Length: 378
Image 1 (cartoon, helix red, strand yellow):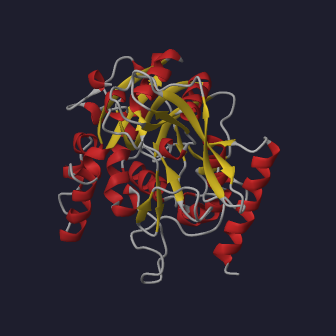
Image 2 (cartoon, rainbow, N blue to C red):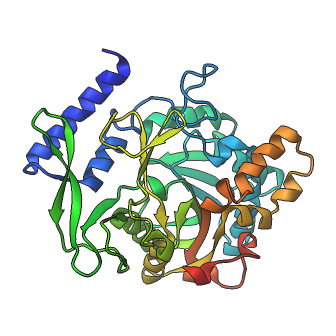
């Protein structure tokens, strides 16, 4: 057996055992958590390459997808300008990054803050993926005295929080409506075992509903985000001072649950290709869902946080000084910057939401939301 097929077989055996333990049906959010984070086997818990600009097997660089820090160091350098303002405005000297990937964003932010004379006293990476820590440590070796790692939040903390493509990797529940708005029946979609031992979809009637009524006579598949919302609540309970910026692909609620989005947003990534079958190739591909930013904002406010702003990634980066930072960039670097800000690339699909404890939200306006703020559309 190849290493990848052995990994998949081992993870499949654990998922099958979990299905049997709960009586034959595993909710999708539990399956997604195992597929991504099962110790030693899940996608983010194994040692397979994940981040990079080239697909697996090309030029010796294997990866499944590229994130903004891998596209251009100017992404993190520009974000650092917002971090510097937030550190000053909230009188804090720590940065917390969730899901740091290769460590590229942390390196860019730390280098830029150092150049600005505002290096934080401490930079803590909170990451469920122990397999990535070694790579992060190598990437961040010159900041070794400043960078620390944690696998959970302390009971209380303060500082500026960063999360780039973190919320999309939090397990979601799948809801499937059979029939139209008037008489359709909602089911929760889970995972079961077929007769031959393969994984198969299985739906059960449920009282769960999307946050909006969805018009139309058609069947409808979508996601709800209980675990992502629980993360925001936990953040609010423990965060005493600071500001946070979460960058991810997603929509406000009215777009997320639009009648035409009838197949949901769940998607898998492998070798820079996407597919919609999370039950195949366990442990070898990423599984994500778009973020419902309205849900994030409402939960944050209910838990005592303020929404500092919400806008597209492109607008946020331009507000924060990307064009000034890129004034000496060459043709290749400008091409990468285009991917970050152009509407038909990451610039519009990706959004940025700013959050803060109420007391830290007073008396300043984050530069990233200076123009084009869309909070009113959440």
